Amino acid sequence: MAGPVAMALGGLALARSRHTALIHIGLCQLLVAAALTPTDGGWRTVTWGGIWGWTEWWTNFTLSSDEAGWLRNKTGATRLGFAVQLKFLTWRGRFPKMRLKLPSDAVEHVAKQVGVAAAELGFYDFASRAAKRHRSEPRDLTGWHECNTTDQVKIASQLVDVIWHDERREEQVRAELMRQMREDLIEPPTAAQINTVIRSALHQADERAIVEAAARFTQEEDCPRRLDALVFTYPTGDNTAEDDAVESVLADIKSHPGNVSLNSLLDEISKLKHVRAVGIPEKVFTGIGVQVINAWRARASAASPSHLRRFDDPVRHVLLAALLFQRQREITDTLVELLNSTVHRINARAQKKVTEAFVAEFTKVRGKAGLLGKIAAASLGAPDGSVRSVVFPAAGGEKTLKDLVAEMKATNAEFARNKREAFKSSYSNHYRSGLMKLLSVLGFRSSNDQHKPVMEALKLTERHKDSSTTYLPLGETIPLDGVVRKDWMEFAIFTPDKGPKRVMRTVYEACVFQALRERLRCKEIWVVGADKWRNPDGDLPDDFEIRRAEYYEKLNKPATASSSPPS
Picture 1 (cartoon, rainbow, N blue to C red):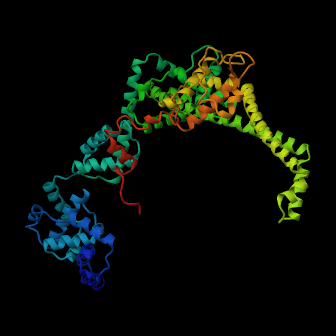
Picture 2 (picture 1 turned 90 degrees about the vertical axis):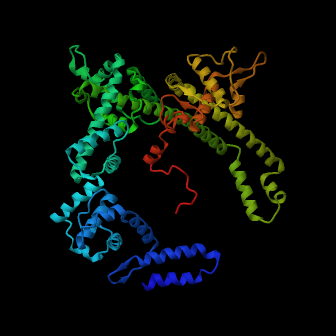
Picture 3 (picture 1 turned 135 degrees about the horizontal axis):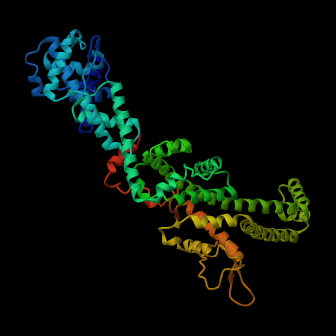
């Protein structure tokens, strides 16, 4: 005891003023903890972690007056063993199987309350018939009871009611199971029985969710038929060709996109049209969690058409609907990413092409490299000299350098113009057809009026997607501010000698796609039916305010911000 107690007493002697009041209280806690934790070999050192542990077992192993009254007819080891089992039951919801399961501090605390030496517990056999018989009395007194078959069926049913719509993780289901058993005062059964209950609950939950989703198909007469068309063939005489056709459509829907290219863009557009043709109603999965839908989608993805045919109609329809529901969102996301990557690629290729041409032009003529060499040699030869006395003579005079600067400025402007021309050329000759088809299958939206010009420009571009004219029609309202950048304005607008200014159609379209890419990347414009590129206002579930605490618990995040910095 000399270590912690002496340290605490020494600290108390220093508590002479109000400034040390908090230290005084902390040292008192240390002294009490030290006095309450003796060991056979003397007193052990107490850490702050030990103090918090002491608080826990002090709360859970302190006998109430009623509980103390239940010990009147018991003595010695039986009295202590009964009391320890009683408090362990109310603490953990089960009985201890052996002495080692009990915190030594808790045993000592209970021993002092019942007036029996803690060492007496060593004579109490927790596996004996007497110990098992003693357990029936705490059960009768507290209401706890062993888990029987009826309880397992009941708990499994309760679990299904809680998890059927949005939970399939075994760890979360196990935690909910233990919570319900404690709430109903049921002692947990064996680990094998718990696993059986969990598996049963998960199976029943999945069946219930499938029945719920399948029932929503009853109002959609054609949708189940279109789903079946993905896996069933209809007799026309050539079974092999029919099976191959079915396999091809479903395999295309399941397949992942290729590298960024016009072909990949067109392939993904085709996939999206196939999925939309089935017409999965949005209400089919209303209220069903993403975990559940993903599990169904995984089953459908792993199964071939021949395997899917073996499922019952409701199961097959729900699995295929989940696959198409998720793939529609994924394909939409892929198309947005292909749009962004394609516009970036056009710009990068234009940059590379023009840069190579200008480098070749720079090194080919006019002796710039020789002039640079002369200036460098002269500068190294007279590093302390002035520019006028060293550099000007080497360059052939001041006028030569002024001409060179003027030429470089003109070259930079020409570089920018050529880059825009290369961008427009690459867009018009190769990528335009795919990007125009993409506009027809994606729905772009914005909740910010600041980006209304881009939205209007998209509508204008789509209206004239089949046009082959050089200029946009004069009667159209053409948004320019916020769509065409300043460095593109001269390139996009043609000013004739007579008549009004005209807007170059293909140049304007290129500017629209660049502006669209910028807004998409900062989510100022979003895409209907997408997941990653969805409306940011919909990132929170509709019932977030009602189920806020539940969602924070599932995310394992605190519901309120902590004022203290993380440790």
